[in-house]
Length: 158
Length: 171
Image 1 (tube, helix red, strand yellow):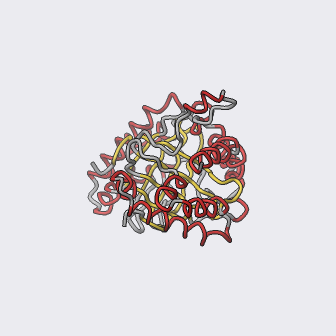
Image 2 (cartoon, each protein chain N blue to C red; image 1 turned 45 degrees about the horizontal axis):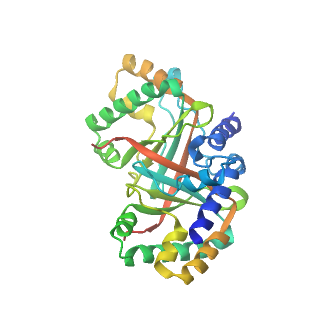
Image 3 (cartoon, rainbow over the protein chains, first blue to last red; image 1 turned 90 degrees about the vertical axis):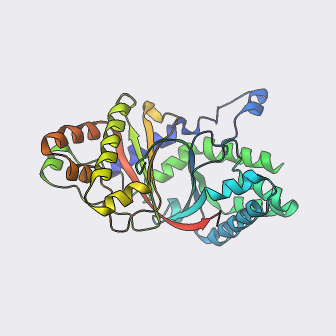
C-alpha cells in the first residue's frame, strides 16, 4: 500500500507540467524565447538536487563559491537573492545512494536568475566555468528531482 | 556559453530526464517517511493520527490535490490557521510563524494541484499532523466532515522531507 502510494506520488511529479518550461521539440526560434526555469515568477522556489555521495564535498565547495559570488556582486539583486536562498540536505537518501540537497528560495527576487553557472561566471570569470564543471560533475543520475515555481497561498502565522 | 550550458543542462536534466528522475524518486527512500494518506475521518474521530515531527532544521511537505478540490483543501488550511492561532498551546502559535503554504502554478499529472508546505524552522518536538491540530480546536461534529473534506481532496498521499541546513547564502 505504501509502495503503491509512493509510486503514484512520484508518477505525478514525473509527468507534471511542473517542468512545463521544457516544451518538447520546440523550433529554434521558440527555444530562444523559452523562459529560464531558474527565474521564479512567483513567491518562492524549490529545487531538489541529487548529488553523488562521493561528490558532496565538491558540491558544497562550489556552493560556498556561489555564496561568495553573491556577496561580492555589485548587482544589488544578487545580495537580495542570497538573503532568501537556503541550502538544505535531506535526511533521507536519494536514488542510488545520492545525497539530496534542497534549495529553498523564499522569497525570490522577481526576475532574478538563480542559475548557478551564471552566478559563478559573473563572480569568477573563467574560474567560474571551471567551478561550474565541478558542480555539474557532482550530480548523480538523475540530477534534478524537482524544480518548483511556487506561489504563496497562506502564511499560517499572519 | 555557460548560460547556454546551464539551460541545456536544465533541459536535459529537468525536462528530458524528468521521467527518470521521478522514477528514481519513486524507488528511493527520499520520501519513505511520507507518501502516507492523511488520516481517515473515521479513524481521526476515534484516535489521533501518528505525530508528524520534523527532527532537523526544516521540513518540506508535498501535497497532491485533486484539481476540483483545491477550494476544499484551502478551506481546511484556513481552518488550520485558525486552529493554530487560537490554540492554548504556545507551541502551536510558534508553529504557525514558520509554516507557509505554497501552490505550484503548474498542474501536476492528471491535473492535480501541487501544494507545498515549507516549514523553516520547525518547532522541535511539535506535531505537524494537520488533522491532529484540527482535532484540538474543533468539536467532533465539526471535525469529522472537515477531516473527510481534507482527506477527499488528496489525489495521492503526502511526501515529507526532513532537511538539515547546509548554508544560508545570505549569512
